[in-house]
Length: 314
Length: 280
Image 1 (cartoon, rainbow over the protein chains, first blue to last red):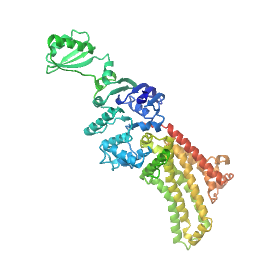
Image 2 (cartoon, rainbow over the protein chains, first blue to last red; image 1 turned 90 degrees about the horizontal axis):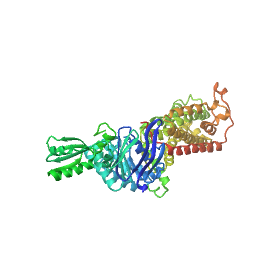
Image 3 (cartoon, each protein chain N blue to C red; image 1 turned 60 degrees about the vertical axis):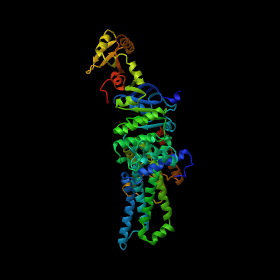
Image 4 (tube, chains in turn red, brown; image 1 turned 180 degrees about the vertical axis):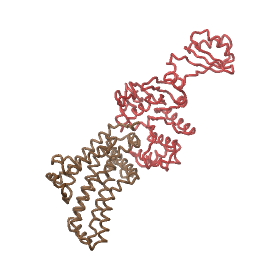
C-alpha cells in the first residue's frame, strides 16, 4: 500500500535555527493534492524534501516506497517543476529537454521522441528551436513543465506551476493536471490562487509556519472545522418564513435574506440538524426549494478559518 | 550518437553530462578571460618571434637562452598564472556556477548517481583545460625559437626539443588534472571559491622558500621536478630558496594522479550529500 503513497513520517527540517517544517506526518495518495499556505509556510521545503533536493533534519520520507537519498531510483518516478526561473545558458527549448533526457541514459531516438511529445503537450512545438533565454515568462513556465513530464513520471511535483501563464495556458495546464491525476498518478501542486486550487484538487494540505494545519478532501477538512459555523445558501420561495422557523433552533447562528428576497444565507453550528429541519419545513409548509449549497466548503474559506488572512490570492 | 548505445548506463550518463557541459561552456562568452590567459603566452612568443625576425642582424642571444626563457615562461606564467587561474575559472564554476545561476537542481533531478555527475563535469572541465593549456603550451614552445630557422628545426627533431615539448605538455596536462581536482572540490564546498583559491595560490608561490618537508605538500613542487629545464633563481631571491631532494619522475606523476583521484573521489562522494540551497 505504502508503495503507492508519498509518505512523511515525523519529518522536520531546519535551516540552521530557522524552521522549515516541523513534525510533519503525511500520506499522500494518488490524485491531485494541493499544498496551500502563506509564504514561508513550508510548501517549497516539503516539495524539495520529497524530490531529494534537500534532506530532512529528522524523520523519514518515502516516495512510492523509495527514499529520496537514492536519486538514481527516485528521479525515475518523480518530475519536479521547481519555482526557480532559471535555465542552463545557451540552450534552446528542445535542447534543454533533450540533453537532460540523455542524462537518463536514453537513446537519441527515445530522447527525440519524448522531447517532441512533451513540448507538444505544453504547446511549445513552434518555439522549440528558439533559445530559452528569449522566451516569455509563460513560455519558460511551460518549458519547465515539459521538462518535468518528459520522462513520464508517476509523481509530478509542481511549485506554483500556473505563475505567469495566460488564461488559455492555465486552462490547458489544469487539464493536463486533471488528466494525470485521473490516470492514477500523483500530482502535487502548490499554488497561491485558491479558486484554482479549489477547482482541481482531490485533496489539500494546509500549511502554516511549518506545520500541517489540515489535510484531506476539502469537504472533509471543512467538516473538521467545528468551531466555525457552516454557511449554507438556500434558494426558495419563502426565505423569510424559513428564517423564522430556523431561529427557533439553538444551532443557528445567523441568517441573511438576499436582496432579491429569494435566497437565505445561513450559518449553523450543526449542518446535519439543519438539513433534517429543512426537510421538516418543506413537508410542513410546502416550501419550494430551488437549490441548497454549502457556501464555505472551499479552500478559500477553510484557509481563512484555519490560517487567517486574505482569501482569493494569497 | 549510436556508438555509446550499447554501453553501460553509467558510461552513457557520464557521456551525456560531458557533452552537455561542452555545449554549454566551451567557447562561451563568460570564459573569455580564460581564453585570453591561454592565448597570452602564445602572443608573447609570437611577438618575440616577430621582433627577432625584424632585428635578426643585431640579435645576439642563443637558442639555449630561448630554451631557458621558455622554461621561465612555463614555470612562472603557465603554471602559476595561466593554468592555475584558468583551472580555477573552469573547475570551480562547474558546481558553483550552477548554484549561482540556480540551475544545479536540473542535474540533481536526473536519475543518475551524483558521483557520476561530478565525474562527468570534471571530465568536461578537464577536456577544455587540456585543449586550452596543453595546446597553448605546445604552440608557445614551437613559436619561441622559430626565428632560428634550420637550427630550431634541428633542435626540435635531432636535439632535445621534442622531448622537452613532450615534458612541458605532460606537466601542463598534470597541472590541469591536479588543479582541476582541487578547484572542483573548492567549487562544491565554498560559496566563494576565491578565498580557498587565494590560500592555495599563496601556498604554491611560497613553495621555493618553504622547508623541504612542507614543499612536498603542494602541486607545484612535483610539477617543477618534471620540468625539463631548470630556471636559475636570480639574487637576492636565490639566497632564500631552500633546496629539496628532487622527486623521481614516476613518483611525481603517479603521486599527482593519485592525489587528484583522491580529491575527485571525495568531491564525487560529497556531491551526493550536497543539497540545493540557492541562498533564498
